[in-house]
Image 1 (cartoon, rainbow, N blue to C red):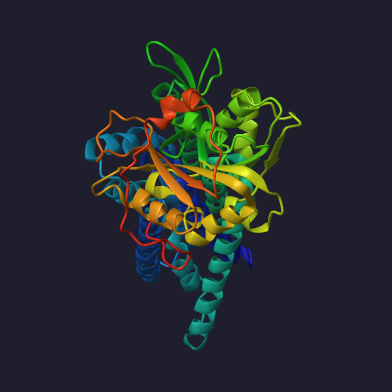
Image 2: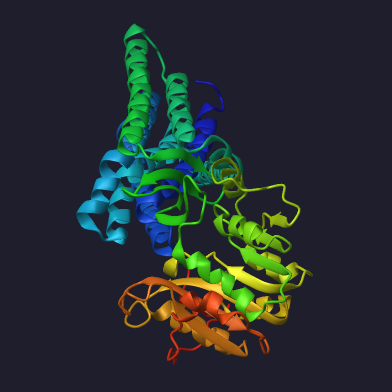
Length: 484
């Protein structure tokens, strides 16, 4: 056996373990989301699986310290990993429909889909310690060395996956690479290879590759409306074409959430709440520059450029893949001189920009899974300071008006009231019950406004909840019970 092959194997298995942990969220997010609770569940399951794997690996190594057994463990890891794409289609999606409880689905799915390969990979490190045949006086030093190598692999796997592999190769290509790499390591490690071994490894290799092809066919058959399935540094994104019976829509999904949709033929924005963003023209009719935080498919910026032909809009969208998809599928006029796009975190942009705006439109929230850093007093105060006098901040919030699902709007209303001279809340769909989660529009007004053309906006203004109030405290960077 080559001198450093065990160390290389331990390093690569450590890297693969972290790759699986990162792609777990990508595989599961279209079905169960990517909230803090979901991430907590995934990490907890993976750590539990690894802990059991370390323990079992040591026991197996003590009973049978044979490098061929380690090779077979790597083959098992490859086989277990090959089931991930098939289980995504046939297991995770069905489990969501059966159970409904997303945290429970996350626990079960993580355990079965990713826990098993993580468990197998974790057996490698203690097995390598046993195979190195250290004497009792050096066992501590050797264990520390192997653990350090495995952790170094995990570090490299984390950075390489997060910064390069996921946004450039995608989840399916990474899984395929993991399978092939584990099989190659298994072949290299196995001693006294004979025809039977090569026949077995050939059959296994062909089988797992066929499984990947079958998984792609099954996914496409199960999701015929998906025209693009893209992994970015931040999300798994689906572009779908959906027929409602009357209108064909082109939609953009991020995780489980519908982010944007447009009429396929006219390219007009479909979400009713987006019309309420035009209220800045009612409260501040002399505006020139608007900032939008959260571009997604850029359906509102596209509307804005058509509606206000002499005005400018800046869009802050953290994910450049969103912009690429908007150009390709949603007719974004990327080269319009009145449009500037900043691929940057929204809070970071607000903290550092020297630009001043007459209105800010905040469309980065996804229900209670909002980026908390944009919900706090400090963030909203910075937005206030970024606006000119008579500036208007308009935010879309998914929350109920009353009841147990109303925390988000009540916390934000209290926070906005602490900062703005006037705050208003609008119910997008007035026919919905007040205890039902829905789109609510929160408007913060800086200074005294000069409203005009009330008739033009009456269909929006009539939806104001004039008696809205909140006794909740404000949310801060130090304490924020909402968001992820």
